Length: 357
Image (tube, rainbow, N blue to C red; front, side, top):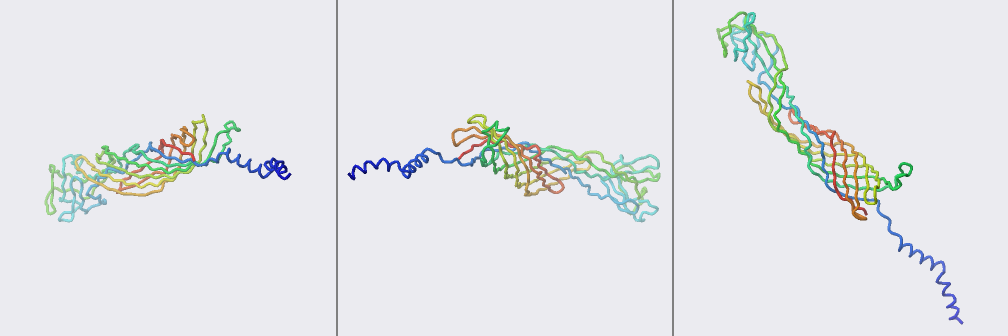
């Protein structure tokens, strides 16, 4: 009797709520996949293009002679002669302690005069150098925030999220073009007072005697002529960028997706600049100058880009993208010259792989 009762109760026990619940939970766990991670990470090749560096302030040529104030009784040295105080302390505002180098300085008009000049460069030679970016590397991560409602849900599979990036590039700009710099010339005119000028080159003396020349000039300044600038200028830069932005991902097919990106960036630039320059002025010779400097700067910026992914399987995909990358200028000076790196037209091409968790 007891055995028959157990046999009757066995189906009931097998279908009791507790037993049934456990069976349903086991079936649910076995047939429900684990939730996908919102993270995707990747890395790859990144090439920064469209850079422009301006080298300016080149072509320094300083005359060893100083421009003296107007008036008499002053020792004056010029690029092409001198007018100095004589033993009489320039009695009657005239001196025989003078010299000049070339007959072209003599003007016979009127009572005659001798012209003297001091020429300096404006140091305004400049040149632009483009590109100079080397292939670099970038690491990035995408965090999926879920479905993006666009166009009244006409693109229901679109998603959006945040993008984090770390990028390194090296920049090497070098230029050795032959340039030209403008000149400024100060010309002082001294009257001969009807005296006959000796043929050049002529050198008077402190004790004299000799032909007399007025010691008080009239002056004119002109911007004319050019000097030739030769040499090399080089800017080397290590650039590391951190970026944070948002993205919108639009599926075209199951495997091919388009990604629109935009955000802010923060660059850390560590650079050095050096130059060697030789400036030649006709008839006055050549002056050499050189300098170097290094600097570290923070460069805030922004970016906007377009990319595409192609899925190789459930976890791996290939990513290609192009981004316009704007940042503040990187300026560095050495002596009186400057190198200025501009990102106004910079863009980044990248090719990498993406791994989905």
